[in-house]
Image (cartoon, rainbow, N blue to C red):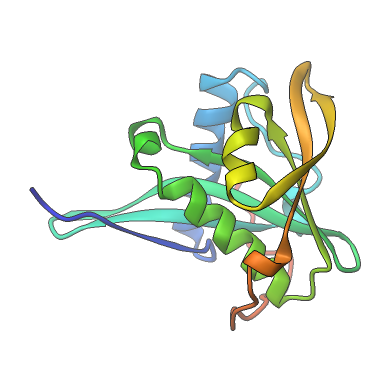
Length: 170
């Protein structure tokens, strides 16, 4: 059996950004039916897309997970549109790796608070990763929790902050 590894990085190339939006559409439009046609919104031009990439020795790199981060106001960051390709959900490391990359990156760039709206079925997973629920809310007719990351568990890194807007693929 071939060993598969994963990396987590900002999506900066045209092809990575295209694959990022394609996977978001597959998860949030086609699979979950939360949006019609696409899930792009006014936050995308000011957000940083992050991808999980699966690597195998004999297969080209494949984007298998997505999340975006954005600074809503100075030092207040949000994560959103976290999703993992259906074929890779049982791996267990991809969602955790995306969350780690998202929060540590924001922490590097001057984050004092990192929040996310989390679908109800994922609240327990986030809690195990040092998040706490602030309140129950409804988003697009579905139950969510507004959650906050404990930044002590997500130390800053050396990730440089690219200028916005990043290339947005239509």
